[in-house]
Length: 75
Image (cartoon, rainbow, N blue to C red):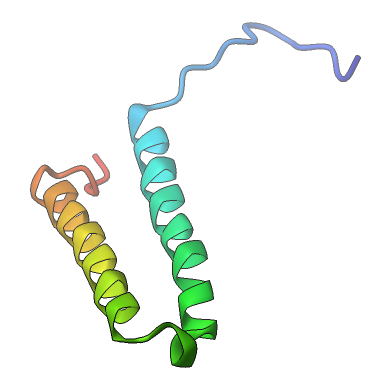
């Protein structure tokens, strides 16, 4: 099924591709979780706003940690 492979079919990807993909998925899921909050902002109250701010701050701390560990640098 599919196209016949020529040569070695196993190609190793650099670990940075996976790291960038993982970081993208984390921040993409952040938007998925924050969208319902943004839609129902007037109904959820101040406590939900506080929870959303804490959620974003935790992700921001994770981003700063990845930045300090040079996980976002392409080498």
